[in-house]
Image 1 (cartoon, rainbow, N blue to C red):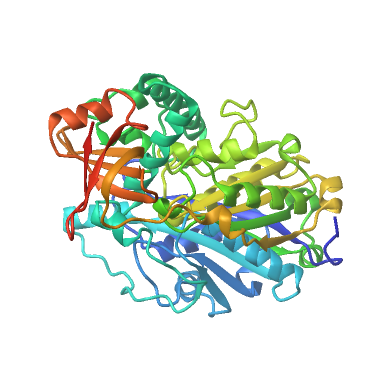
Image 2: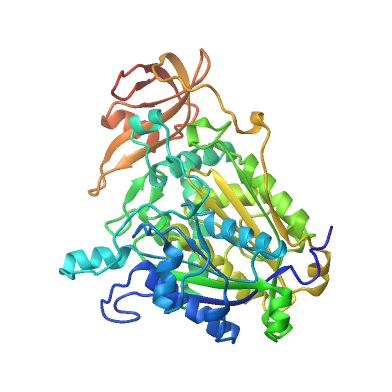
Length: 504
């Protein structure tokens, strides 16, 4: 593996995290994302032990927040840091963006374009919601489209999905989960136990994490049992299996070249090297994929990142796999070839349902925890992020092992997959004929009643379509009480309204 040019490889030298939760950290005091980012940056600089980094950093790179759309988020962070504006850019939205951002920064450092970077992100959705309820007027920066996005953004779903009620991750990831269950050959009851057991392990990590939004552990039984405090949301996910986005959390990293770390006399034991990274993209929307049980893009990104890093899954000491929903973890582990009960664990953070999922910023917390895990230990950590409809995959590998650092490529690559890997069956907007349920989900209201059944159907005549079942007890029961994947039926066109699928 070719080594990065002398003195140019990127190292992480500081990390900081912040949680602003009323009752745990302070009274209700909502702070906008840029302020939380600045606090996380200050903690990261303090962790690095070099106060002058506040002035000497030549780049601020941010994760796009959902709470406030800043015209220039890096400049907003600089204002809260009380430092002059400097070069900056912002990653497009998506849970992959922290790894994507770190990878881009590492490349710029390796190429000599950047010396010292502050990488940060935060969300304040809980604070904004709490302020509205309590009549607190917020003097936050007015929203506007970002002028510094790194890349372009597209809608998360396509027209046929939106017409049938699929417009956000909360509806999309259950489609993967039901397909994965059928593919594994588990009954619904068996699979709910399977999912809740590995999610409970995530919860145990979150309970040990002093900055988790939910500091108490949750048992597997608690996660899978349906009740007033854990209702069905979209089958097969209970509320406790869903990412918790209503949080106020932020994180930051200080990243610099080896040469700068030497100049600033940062001790070797306080540094963690960026070994390598990669990014790849599956079909953009769920129904455009080849199938719902694999991820060619994740497999490619993981393989290439580890190749550049000069290592493999067996040599990694800890993983932090993105965990917005259980299906994301299951697919990542399968593509890596590791077990969900791997003794090394699959998270250093606790998961978006238990640690809290601050929008696109969660994986920056994962990277901060991976940095802390590897620092001063000669250990290697693997972190992956995921964005959109199980679409965008980014991987970063970090280590403090001198031998691995010497052998690593110290750079990141963006991969382009062969069309046949990311091109699924033709989508049929107005179907008319028999077919088989490929996957599905059922939406529940807040009182626990099923209200909508959404099916993805492979048509006998060819192609794939999306439809809804009749909103009646019998079709709902047939999808909820026994395996719905593989059921036969007939699809009929809905015009501007949803297509219908009549189960046999």
